Image 1 (cartoon, rainbow, N blue to C red):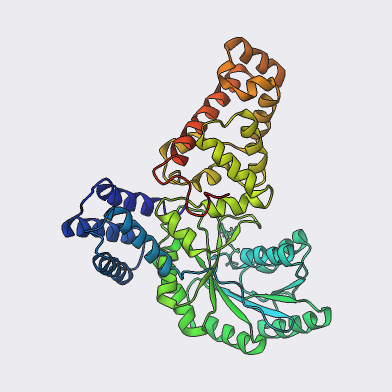
Image 2: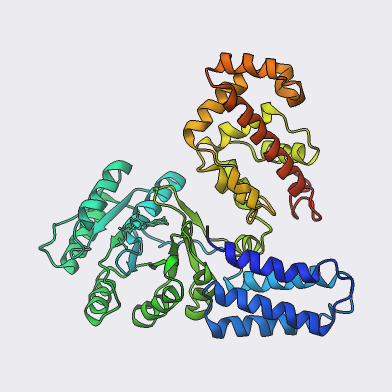
Length: 444
Ligand code: GDP
């Protein structure tokens, strides 16, 4: 998960401030120094880290936070706002042409995730907007790139235009666009070639394709795992080609995340989407404010709710949060929760979006795979209604009965009850943290 390191560094720096009623200018500088180190450690470019700190300092002194109430909280807010601004403040949607088709040209270095992202984006448009995209396979150099796109297209029932590897990519694009016209496709994605490094030939080919296709959007895919190089790549492509947006891939990996902070600042172009896994559904809109909160360890409660909303009512999710706060979360809720998250990726990812959980060591113990879900479900179904409401009823004899009923060993029953209690306790603690529910959720 990206940002963990940055999160913990900033939190340590902030901890020194929180609790202090009065903060001196020296305290402020000490904290800013820590934040600067955290940014550098996360691969944020030095110049950007410096200017970030200078701006936070200026705002903090300008707002006279040192003299006011809760200086540390005010500083956290300033850092949060500054992070948000630096990443572009607002989510920026895909460009759309007034007449069909909208042409989206993809660019990026080999291995950045271009082909995968084409499939993810086309699939998202198809599902969200009933779009009828056509994918043009114009990467004739990377072995198997065309076959990869064809396979993805078949899986998603999205047509793919290709002419093999022996035709010039410029011609492929011309012919592909002709087909899109005939078939009245409303979106066209052009999967272009990448190289291991930016070079003249590649850029010339991309410029030619741009002239032919006149794309409404030139989306650059950048691998977040490449750290500082991601920012340099973005700058290189932007200078040579004039990109319109960025997709930052592999944010699920062990990345330091600095790229998300630097790219907008260096190129002036928005990050529009982030890739968070290899599956075709692992693509999210990039929300700068939510990412800033995530970096600061305030969790990503809005993303959590949005993710949940796809399958369940947000009110239900909020009601569960409320139950957690009141510590009345029972096995029925637990089961509901299990059902909801079953289709939403690993439990761990979900928990990380809850405020304060992002960096929690105990989280490592809550590992729930898809098979475990089925087992846990069976165990809860073998409890009586009274037991589901009150875990304290679960005596050893009852646990043995539940084990027999669910076909699981007693040790599994015990383990699940322990996990349930741990989860409830952790969530209770965090949802009852100093801030309570994040702003905007109180009235849900
Ligand atoms: P291309 O050469 O730019 O077209 O790159 P590909 O689309 O073939 O992707 C290269 C590798 O990165 C593949 O193994 C993808 O599954 C993987 N990949 C792409 N996007 C992501 C992502 O967001 N997260 C993770 N973990 N892997 C990704």
